[in-house]
Length: 345
Image 1 (tube, rainbow, N blue to C red):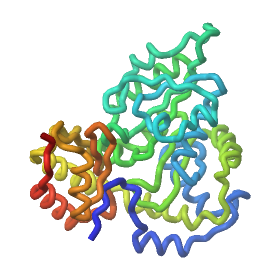
Image 2 (image 1 turned 180 degrees about the vertical axis):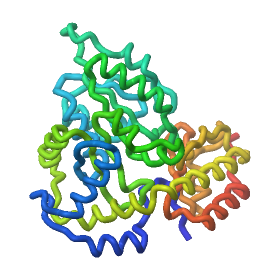
Image 3 (image 1 turned 90 degrees about the vertical axis):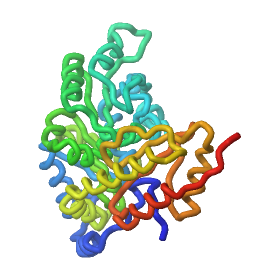
Image 4 (image 1 turned 30 degrees about the vertical axis):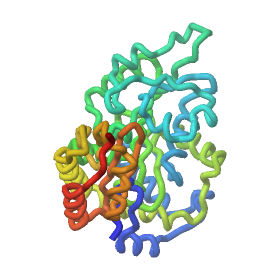
């Protein structure tokens, strides 16, 4: 049995989800005529208290569309140095929108309102780019699934309002944060101008993200999605998986968080591990000792059919998910306890 902890994107649709997909009522979404897509969009817009929503094939496309909505070429976006929109979207902010990024030195992917305030460029200074957008990621991917303090997000919103800046949330794993912090979608809908929600990570759908915003934002997003090649036809078969995930896979995220914390404790007890980042949700970030080759650690687990990922410089990652069972957890803990690795001389 293979145990894949590389990401929470490796899940397969459940039988209930497959049944919902196969029985979906569909139409041509390019013409706005797919009833299941419309139902998904309306469901999420209503949940977050936003005026409108638009379904995308990927979270990267949804985020890049939001950036293009809020900026003009030669302007600047403020984000964390670990932000997904900067590190893992192929340089899209520069290529698609022609903007630069002001990277803040946050804590595990999270920065403060004061840092934002100090980083806003003087709009009258023609030598530097105009600051137009602040982007936040919750939970933070490179930060180990860390959850933002909502009061700090509110303070950043105030800074944005004072300086006429747009405010976007990359909510790829937002539902993990909502469950862990006992927060509501409406809180986030009230705070951010646009929000991207990924359905294919913790929620377990096979594909898809949704961008939320005002009617004017989504009208612009529809044109940008077409420009990026993201218009789809009878995509209601996939949207049905998203609806099923929202109805059945949100509360269970707590199970993933609990399993991640159990693994974190086992890693702390390992003689090969020197540090485990705080675990709040389903991502485990840890560091091997200086005398341990990180690839040897990965390979040793791979020999036991346990797959994890290396992030370089001695930093490793595991991610729990819908398909990671209690039996698999027991196997992982046993193998971590029994692990034997040659150390460097």
